Image 1 (cartoon, rainbow, N blue to C red):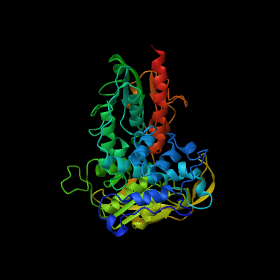
Image 2: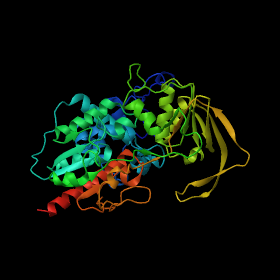
Image 3: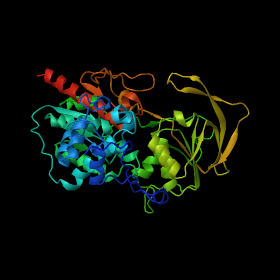
Image 4: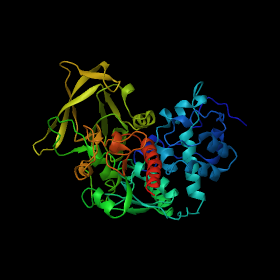
Length: 463
């Protein structure tokens, strides 16, 4: 029976008062009954407008139709043809501005909860199906993947399906890239990432950790080891700062360091070998998803007050609306139209105040958002004992500096052909944040998928 409700089937969540005391996943997932009920809201449109906005082109109406029929594994197989990380994407992709934004049901109500259904299918598979993917006969050439984040994993998975011998090189001691060091456990449990990585290894992908490309081994040295093509998906892990007084004080972190200590090193655990200072009053500077992750993590570490300081209005915040709403439910204090000018410290060089100015919005800038302008005589201070700067990142220049012929733009991103991901160096492709700067998981995966097709064509032409 079609479900003509104008509202999505609500996903159960941990209560805010409970979830701020733990790092367990906030969203609890659909039951089979809830998933089928939501799937029945889909009209199965013939022209599939939702697919046009999916960066990896999942056949959305088709997989949802299988859910209606209770054929959950068939639904998983459909998703897996296009996506290497369905359990991840179902949790962290901004479906509201991608596939769901084109859903016909959204014209007179809420769109179909495509992301929730993708998550349900992937979780059902992981719980109920024990079969392992069989590696293809790797009779084709060797391909090296630099970085094990979403772009690299997507590229690796697609190339393995095509029969290439794929090796991923990861700089950290644990693979997964931003999926493990950047996104908190309460949004993306790490056992989910481990399962997706295991699926890739079962397909024959080799993952090597603790290898820093550009230092441990160079791109040219990889070619000398008989790798015929290389994909760079090393992300954008170099933090940006505001260059204001006091950023070098104790208790001031980049969001990268703050979240890496928490997510990768488990700094919230009593026996952590990489602890993080337990603070009572924390200021997060920025308005993106990373800022929301840092703010909500600080709350779970025991902070009594957590401020999100953002220089534009809430309307301009780049974070997902869901993440902003969750942060508000958890007691995060939003200080919008405010911009830090200085961080002050005590006699022991620990941050204890942040000085801000009130802002107003002027004409749109190059990003299309209205430019924030400082109000005169509007300075005020907030007592804090920790500041987390979350205003963006850029690619680490290590690979570029040690790879002759590899060109970058003025902010350090690799220059590539938009259709293929090919860089200025023959046989070297790139995609994800190392090209675009900080973006979403699914856009990085789309870049990896596009590059895999280009690599396949390139290597086929060498025969």
